Length: 607
Ligand code: ADP
Ligand code: MG
Ligand code: ZN
Image 1 (cartoon, helix red, strand yellow):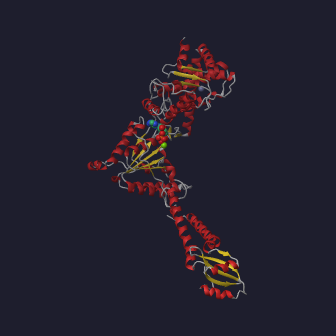
Image 2 (image 1 turned 90 degrees about the horizontal axis):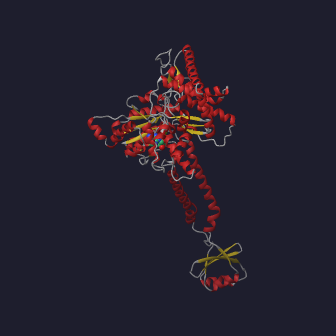
Image 3 (image 1 turned 90 degrees about the vertical axis):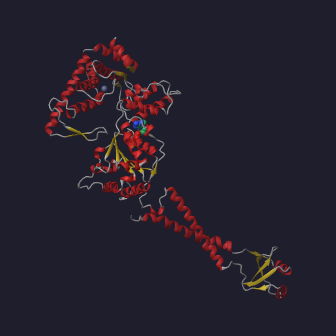
C-alpha cells in the first residue's frame, strides 16, 4: 500500500505548534520563574540587616549593591540598593560580620537546572500530550492507526447481537431452512466433516426489495452466535482507487482469523456487476478490481475452516456470471414476495410491537395487500399506529388499518385539494365505470371499496378489488376481464359526458403493460403462439422488458396489442350501455358519500 502523503500533515502541524509554544515559554514564562525576585531596599535597611548579621553576600554591580540576606527561616532573599561611596566604614563592618564578597551573586538557577526546566521538561510534557492525543484519536477512528489511514480501514461490524432471530422473520420458510443449515454447520463444522459433506462457500439471497433479505442475514447472525462481518457493497466502492480491493483483502483476512464466522455482503450488485468485455470506455476499473479481488479471495480460502459468505441482491440478472460459478455463490436462496399466509404472518409479527384493539382480525388486511412486500406491510402497521394516535385512540382500530393500507398503496389523502363539482362528477362516473364493469363480469375479483377522495400520489379516486383467494395463474379470460375493467372508467366518461379526460392515464399504462405481456410473454396471442418475444431484464425491480424480435414482428405485436385493447374497451362500453340506470344511481350515491364500501355497492346493484 502506498503511503498517503496527506497523512503526514497533522504531524508537521503538531511539531510546529510545539516549537512555537516552547519559544513563547522560554521568552516570557521561564525567566520569571527561574529568576529569583530581587527586592529594592533602602541604604538604611541594608545597614540594619548588616547589623543584625543577616547579610551573607554582597557584590557591587554598576552603582548598585546587590546583597543576599537570610530571612526568618534562613533562606536567602536578594536585595539591591544604592551605593554610598563615602561610607568608609562599610567594608570593615562587612568584614567584621563575616559577609562574603562575591563578584556575582548567583541569583540565577544553575545552567543545568535552567536547561532541564526550560527545555527537557516541556519536551517531555509535549511528548506525553502527543501520545494521549494519538490514542484518543485512534479510539475515535475505530482502532485503525491514525498514521496508517492509507491502509484499508475495512469497517468490521461484528453484529453477533443484532437482536434479530428467525422468529422476527415471518414466512420465508424455505429461505430460513436453507440458512438454518448454514448456521448449524457453523455451530459444529466437525459433524459435517465426518460424513464428508461440504457446505457451499457462499449463498446468495435474491428477491425484490423489502422482502427481508437484510433482515434474514441479521437473523442468521443472531442465531449463529459466531462472528458476523457485515458490509454493504456500496462501501467497497469509494474514496481512492484500489481501496475497494484492499478492503476485500482486509475483510477476508479478518474473517479467516475469526473462523468459523459469517461474512455478509449486502447489495452485492454494486460491486458484482457483470464486467464488460473490453469496450471503449473500459468500464469501471475500480469496481472491476474489487470484484476480481473478491473472486480470488473466495477461491483462496478453505471452506472447511468455516467461513460462510452470504450476499443479498435484488438484481441477480446483472451479476457477473463468475460470481455464480461452483465454489462461489453456488447456492441461491430466493426470498420472494409473501403470499396470503406470509402476509398475515408478517402483519402479526409487526402487530406484536403495537397496541391493537382486541380480537382485531388481520386477515382482511392481508387479503387486500396482495403484492405488498414485508417492508410495506411493516409500514402499514406503523401508519395505522400513527393514525390511531392522531385520532386520539388508545389502540389501533380496524379503520386505522384500512386507511393505512390505502395510504401505503395510494398515498395520503389530499384533504386540501379543491376539485370542482363537475370534475368530481366525472371522477365518480369514472370509478363507478370500473366497478360496474368488474361486477358485471363473472369471475372478477369483488369490489371492496370505491372512493373519490384524492390521494397525494396523484390518484383522483380508485376502486379496490380484492381476490377471494390467492391467485398465482392468470387465464386469458382473467386477463381480458381485467382489461375491460380497466377500460371501464374511460368507457363511462364517454357514455355519460360524450367527452374524454386525462383521468385515465394510469389505467392506460396498466392496460398496455398487461396487453403487451399477453402477446409477448404469456403466449396468449392469436398470431404468435408460444413464442417469447420479450425478455424480462430485471424481474424484481419493476420488470422492465427488452424486445427480442425483428422490427416487422414488433410492428405486428403493436397491432395485436391494439386489437386486444380495443376489444376490451368495446366490451366495457357494451356492459355500461346495457346498465345505464345503475350507473347513474351508483355514481350519484358515490358523489354524495365520497367513499362507499363493497357491501353498499352490491346493495344498490342488486336492488
Ligand atoms: P431487503 O433487504 O430484502 O430489501 P429488508 O430486510 O431491509 O428488505 O426489510 C425491510 C423491513 O421490512 C424489515 O426491517 C422488516 O421490518 C420488514 N420485513 C420484510 N420482510 C419481513 C418478514 N418476512 N417478516 C417480518 N418483517 C419483514
Ligand atoms: Mg436490504
Ligand atoms: Zn381509472
